[in-house]
Image 1: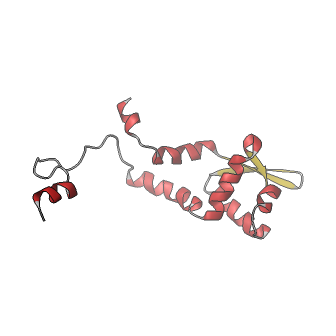
Image 2 (image 1 turned 60 degrees about the horizontal axis):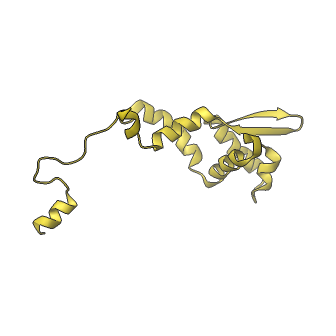
Image 3 (image 1 turned 120 degrees about the vertical axis):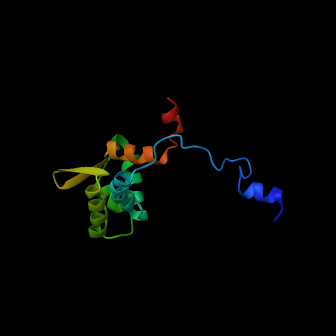
Length: 125
């Protein structure tokens, strides 16, 4: 392998530097373990679509009747997925008469978003 190719594969080789320094504190083991259930809850295509449907409804909340109509799945299956999202804290709900209405939990979603967003700007400010 030529020296030029090696320097492209391993930037900084030969000049004493390997990589850019950390710009912020990475997730600790405890925080990562705490976030895993949230990411597992949205790792299913049906649950991810449910979150999107709820977010897209006017007023930020959706009736379960609107959610079940959007899928070719049984009502118990949709209920199971909503239960997983609710147990993870991603959504909340309220019964109004015979229907249940769901909305996103903005604090939990903001926390997930903060993990995925580049945190360099936060470290600089």
